Image (cartoon, rainbow, N blue to C red):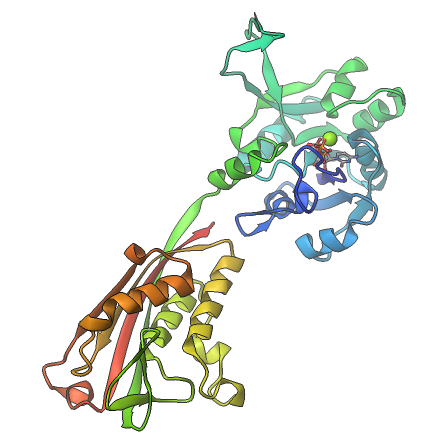
Length: 368
Ligand code: CTP
Ligand code: MG
């Protein structure tokens, strides 16, 4: 079975800087969600995408090197252009504007196509309906979704016979109007279309999130003649932390914790100590880089917790400033930034004041 995603519309009702199918939802362009779902289905052999003339750069940025076909002025024409390129007995036609495609719906369509030449997902109406303010009995009324499935000959015939001066908002209605029968299968609210600006937040809300936590740990040596940067704050002290960057052990542990949540290596992977450009660098940059990698995945940081391990300086007087600075760097409220401190009872290198250790844990939510 070949899946055809129609994405050649201009998204005029949704507005926005780019057509809605390229707008970001949960860290990726809207169309990338449906593309991934269709590609990942075992019954789908190939996915082809119909795009507007001139939209190739947007489509390539969103999807990479995938088969692209240029569509037409209407959805119907876009489907027709796509159909001309399909070489398979069965075709699924899907709107790019419906990002979430449950595998079960594809299963149901495929099953229906064993005995029918066409199948569409429908959902019964829950709300009372009115036309011009007057209630319309909703018995027997359903709303129609995509993906719709067809034997290719049936859909080609419907497109060939369709009058050129009339439009159709989907393909099943074309088959039906020309006398064909269309099997109805159970649709899914996940398939709701993004049409208006407010539909983007509804789509975001449908994304399933997973929680990830990871830890970070770091040590730097305390030496005379160095500045003491700790937790993003400059602290007056007779010694400071030494290292290649500003040696803020607290921000380094936090950076590693954040990188850990996306399994993106550690601070040295991104900012090698051998690279002279990081000499004396403000560790705030490292922390913000880790946060930006999480944001690129559509993730959000829920909470960070940092423990500083040293006899001196006393952390308590600086806790508020550290929470404020880290919150500012990560775009988090102070209630989501915890700073703790402990001594090691004068034992070990921290106890002897030779260095400061820090450990951190970060919790993030990522779209699945
Ligand atoms: N579509 C298409 N070619 C067109 C028009 C629409 O491939 N000439 C696609 C859209 O990209 C969308 C699907 O058909 O994935 C359903 O159309 P719709 O929701 O109406 O999207 P747009 O036409 O882009 O939006 P609008 O009508 O608000 O401009
Ligand atoms: Mg349209």
